[in-house]
Length: 431
Ligand SMILES: Cc1ncc(COP(=O)(O)O)c(C=O)c1O
Image 1 (cartoon, protein in one colour):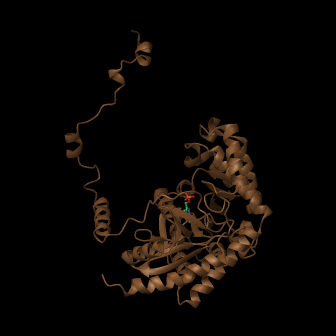
Image 2 (cartoon, rainbow, N blue to C red):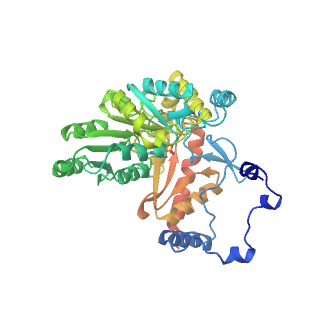
Image 3 (cartoon, protein in one colour):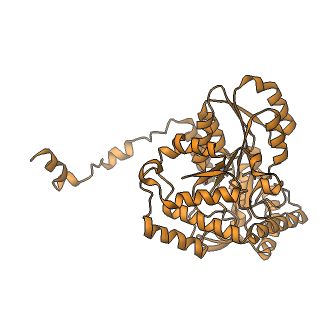
């Protein structure tokens, strides 16, 4: 048989996968058994199992993540998903995604720089730029990747990335990978940041201050005027991650610039995700033409990765169209957030974050208590996730409520008294 024929003709025996025996499989250790982080994780899982609790993470759900969710055959009021404007599952968004599959298939099938580009990519970028008020925009296949790849591309050794204690892991990872110096300050401590920059500004070339429009763990809305004042005084760039603010805050959902009535050019690098208000998956950067051209041709996370899939792109376009036509969605979200916080206050609960913010956190104290409270609420028909180490520090373990435009006042009225009563029970509980 010649070489080409031997590649295409195999015997039945050759088609069998190579398997190890049961004895070999059970004798084999995991490749991570001697990793300290894995051993610590195993201890935490075993601890949880010993107290008879079920693992609250990676639990599958059924159907769309609306204000009611189905898990383990139960219907629950849902505070665990960021379908903030109710656009995931919206018929027009689903139809757009399905039509794009018929036209383009399910994958972009190549990086955009080669043959992966489809018309929908340019359409979404133009719409995003026009919605944000920036000269141009660029989409990436993940929000996480957007931060990691853009920050690590833009900064290098003589530079500095400055972020605060609430920064998302993707920002910190991007900063570390860049090789630039990193500085961290306490979230909201603008005077502390100012002092830090006064002390350090002479020691780095370019500086990038990265803030979040709405902080994903605590729910504060960025004090953009302070951030802009500081970035100007110290001649550094400002990047704002609007994962939880784009579409959600401001009278028409245009994010923190709209909240503070500041021009979009106040922010040098607008970053956001398509996975939250826009009911899809992916991330974007908005900014001036030069910035977007630089990233389009030079950012490894774009060049060396497949283009955003046709259904994800089409879903985001359709969601953005609806958001522009229906500004009552962000308005209703703000009303529900205000109502949630008002009721919580009346029941003696201290909820983190600002009025109108879609993220509302209830600090419980430690990991175990946060998990117990989440479980107790689950049993009473409320789905809210515990946030524990390493996402937050051990003493600030919490429940994080995502409030959406689709929550009704009745649902919130049903929730808050149960949260107050259950929290009391958990805090009284002795280990
Ligand atoms: C502030 C922030 N930035 C970036 C991301 C990453 O976005 P994605 O989940 O769309 O990859 C998240 C995810 O929740 C986030 O909260």
